Image (cartoon, rainbow, N blue to C red; front, side, top):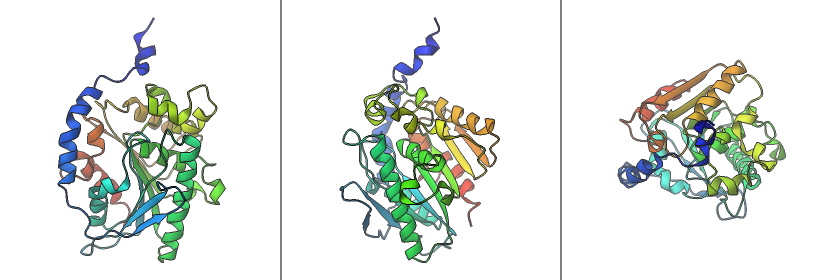
Amino acid sequence: MSIARFQHLVPNPNILVEGLRLPWWLLRIQNLPKPAKKLRKHRYGPHFRQYYLHYEPAKNVAERDTVIIYTHGSGWQFGRPEMFEANAQWLSEQGFHSFFLSHRRVPQSDIRGLRSDMASAVLAVSQQVEALGMAGKKIVLAGNSAGGHLSALAFFDETLLEAVGRSPRMFSALALFAAPLDLDCMWPSPPLLLLTNGKRNPEFSLSNPILQVKKAENRPVLILHGDMDGVVEFENSRRFYQRLLDFGSTNLRFETLQKGYHLDSASWCIPSHESSLVFKDWLSQFQ
């Protein structure tokens, strides 16, 4: 019997390396420049986790015709937008308005709650964009790790935004960084089980981004992943990219960080990092 059949039932051994690298990575991120100005917190629901932060472009750069809606990672249960101010500053320096989303977490909520939060947050951001006179701007959806998972659902699932009267066609492009895109590639960790309620539950299909790809996609999609990732298996991105190809999708860019770990995909706010160079180059198509 092949061992490969059971490889996704246990954590990737590289997760130990990820844990050892985390303190150094956090220190490096904390030492990066932070935004000089942060607009007030905007709420889109009654729960204290239901809010987003809006960051403006830096004053000394030309404003782009595109805004970024970004959802951070941390296993659907940790982190908050305020921890990613270095990422917001990086986007500000590129001339983008950016909106960093917060959502309810597992175990207090599951995939239905998080899908609802994504829809409500996207609606609130789009309404603010319109109120600020930016209705003509393109919207790029982006996310890292668990945030990339939720962003992919919002981009590809035709039903997720229906309840708020929006369509995923409102998004012009998608950027995914080390995201769980095929949940069959993930080991059944407690957060994943709390999110999906198990593979035998009907909600599992609502949780799995790869199952939402049902036709050719011609909007730009960036997929970036390290091949040594110990948290989210690299196979997630490879299979997702292949499914997009199988449907005849175009405008795809799949970047592999050679000998890259999970934190490398999240390092695009570090100017000299390979992921930063890739993301900046990809964003250059949005003037």
